[in-house]
Image (cartoon, rainbow, N blue to C red; front, side):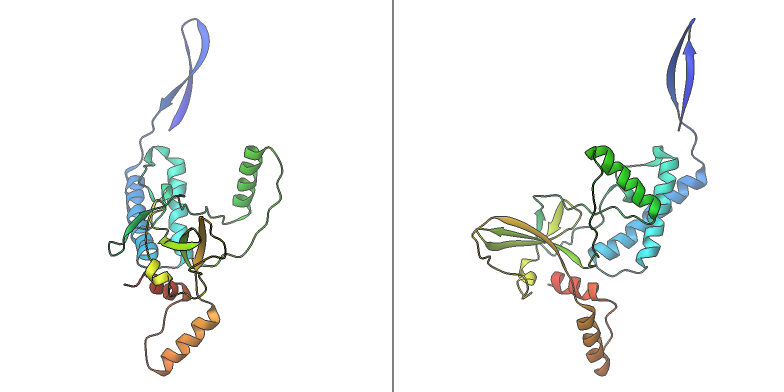
Length: 228
């Protein structure tokens, strides 16, 4: 779209008329194809934990779609993969609504993205903040709800608003306390993950037995949490 400046009558008064440019047919078709492909791989990754492409390849698809939608904002829809969190709800688990929406973080791919983020923060806070960074553990997002210090619910992120209650599986994880030292109500967010050393040892044992090797630690952690 473009904005056209014009004047009316004898008085030179500026007004802006929104003029919609016709979107080329090949662009519309590319957007449709990108959305279908992204939704397909998002479902495999977030819902079934069986990714078919690398994170880099998936991010490239998202970036291409974001670039086109930035050029042609009239193509943006509420259902576009750029506008929401991936992760359909599995029917085999009870659905639970998150008290606090579980949105994902935006990615930063280069220094320009970092600088743009910094500028947005400065404008919002009206100060120059200091930042702390840490490595991200790639696991399965889990939201633990404690009532009076007792674990009452363990939910996956799902689509950000509604997740799956996997408390029966989470109770088998020894590092997650079933009862806190204090009788408090609290929501704890974290990641279920497997150390690479444990993953490598497990695959060595499976290789000796002639069993199929696991693809990566995240799939094992997610599979154990979401198995029925």
